[in-house]
Length: 238
Ligand code: BTN
Image (cartoon, rainbow, N blue to C red; front, side):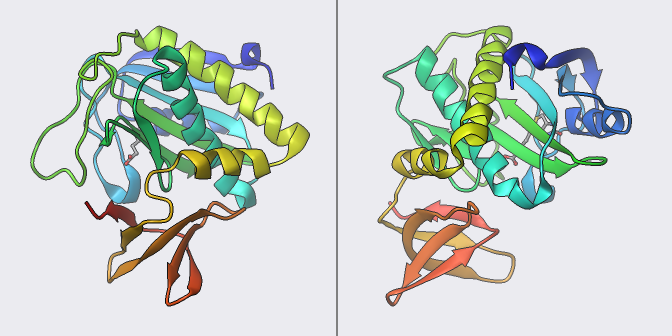
């Protein structure tokens, strides 16, 4: 995949860039980036709202990808964000949080929402807090923005860098497989080897976080037994 292959469509205002990507997937050829300067109905994971604050970056990648390997796409999307921020600010304190979050100074800096589109297409919707972050009380996790953390970059520059890094990671996947990408994730994830809680609708699961497997499932060890977890929200113990 070449960075120049992306067809970039920019809109002043959209409900959700993921919805526009779904619409485009009906007649898609090649891969696309759908970007909106303003998003009025941004969606988050697990039915949550994504507050789309002015000055932040909202875009969706629309690309062909096998649904059964979705875990690989989740990990590539997240590590590409991690690597983009590291490239802009090598000293930044960043870490990865399962399944697809990136933390800056321990707070959520971005969000990724993967959805299936028409045919073989997948949508990777990404929100990056460039300038602002929401700070209301009903948020599940603390949040921050690049600007609040002292990192100056425009949405335009961040997106171009992200596309380069994402394309490069897709090439690594194609040429050498998922293993090195999985290892990168595990090496840079927060709290591997520590006790965590995974909150699901009906229960909380507690155990030692053992990283992710080749399907990007979370591995949780309890009583010397490792279970694979496919959904839930991770909480750390301070
Ligand atoms: C999360 O819950 O952390 C995921 C948030 C994903 C937000 C992005 S913003 C661009 C794209 N369009 C949406 O409606 N959602 C994603």
